[in-house]
Image (spheres, rainbow, N blue to C red):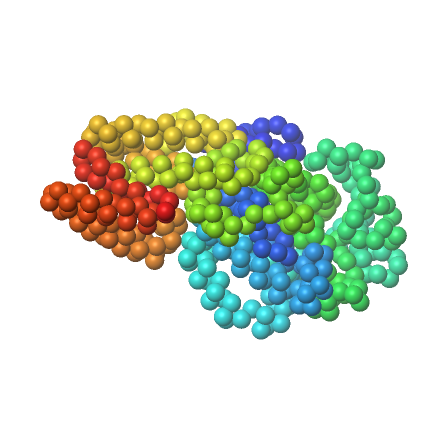
Length: 508
């Protein structure tokens, strides 16, 4: 494998050399669950899922960590607004996020940590009923249970240990105003700003805590003392008084817990580079950790002139996508087709165009299977592998996919079964890497979806048989009526020299 990735830290495309041969550790900043996810969040999950699949395809053992931030200023603000326990807001939105990832066929992370712990929540907050709902959502949307998906609330002890180390080494200090706050001393870390390219003298004050107790306005909070205005259950005991973690220390602690002091890849959206990732680097390396060897950031998904953002209120969610007639697998194809570092300017029209393109791919796979039977995924073309190794260039990779698709359609038209088999195996191999293989149970609704596909096959076959009998009787009106009814149901029938074939289109 000769994978090269753009590393934000060096601002260059670098050969990927794993810390340990044959293994790769990846940490992806997950969602802060104060609200349901929008498709900008889902782009993150899909992009790094493709990276993970490419590593797996090349024989790597992948440890993939995607955290859940379930304690945060925004979550507490929502809790106060709605007079609800903070964990009920975060947990409810975690369920929605998990279902969305599942529907897009995103492989589960090896770990998905959360900043605090289930043991710190009231026992009744995670009820058996909610577990059943979550499990059902995972199954129906084909999200396998993650090996590790940690919440921030489960890792407060690790945060305490990391903060204590930073204080002992002179990189952090407790506030002297009795607030219980603890701050990272930015001036103690000379490399601060190198990841993002920010000049420390030009930085504005950190806005994550009041500035009057800080030695320097740029210093950021590691621990926030509990305030009377905050929910009583949103705090934990600590050596510095009851309080809760700052956002940045959560990820450093969870990286340490699951990937050790040094690991291969840290991922996230470009908008997280500063201050979140800059602060992660500073506190982790000040503690003596090697931390991430590569920083891989994906581009943003814009709606209008600005990035899609819950705080701005300009979001498109999965419910909107399905309401306009686009399936989750088609949304995934839309999200993986551009290069992961490119900006996507969302529009319903562009999404529908991607859905039409995917349906052509799906149509070929269905027709080829009808012709030569189900063929497993083969080897990917050299041009596809070269594109993927070139900074995960899925845009170029999908161009190779469409070239193979044209060859496959030609083979079908010519009745060349051997060439059809080769094309089908090649196309399926590429679709598997992108996570959009229509024969993958994850893209047809899991086990139950597989059963339903068989039912649909039988029903359509019966309808086509009735149509064929009507045509033999020269009852053209009856034959046309069967075709029109199928079309109304979203089944498009095409007559070919080898007999009728059908594909899924749009319902009338």
